[in-house]
Image (cartoon, rainbow, N blue to C red):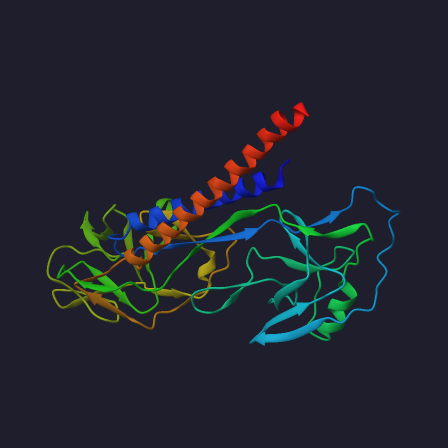
Length: 347
């Protein structure tokens, strides 16, 4: 297969996915409490490139090699090698690289990472650093020697590495707060600070939301689709009267305390997934930790979407330009194949 054609095609597919995500963000600019999605893309594994005429393969014999090793910041480490390759375990196979940045995860494994918007290092769905036997490297002591012993030295006919393009890896949810809008509605609530309202879905499933646009359905406080909003004592029954909601979440009906909104913060937000209707659910086998709510509940306000329309339009223009550039690459590769088949074939 023509590698240039394949790389151009993967770039087109990735940019199409990124454009779909951006279009969805822009469509929800006016959705209360909406949290924008961020696209994460990565290259395919770096594969070894060898000569067509191979000499007999040699064993992976360690050679003299000085690894450049440094602690970049915090718990992030960087290593480079001139002779040999670091090996990464990826979902698509082994990747051979000359330079790596990694952290030590909670289980002690050396693993690549990314930073979320809170500037925290996250390792979910990231790649492990492995040795020549395919074992994952573990341990924080003597990292330099551990990396040196894990280097892969290819046989002489290997001339380098190559990549097959890029792919869409996953979506990352931006949980930063939007602006607070004054609506004056008695049942419009906004959360000032970190936290989520809890609502009850089908079969008693607990769902989380930042959209505080509520109503009274069959006497119960609910969202606009009829799902019951939860208090610390369960469903909240409001049988007429004047409703007042205080900053600490207390709900008073004609001055009498009815319940307290069950508003919680979540420490492991990476385990939250979008359900639709501006709701979040906990991914299967996800171990979230609910923390006490430290912010305020504002009655008569709603939180706006955290999607900035201006930056979104700039990103859309850039994506379209990248898309057009990749189209030209695919067209150029196609013309080269056509010329090879028609003109060179006649010679």
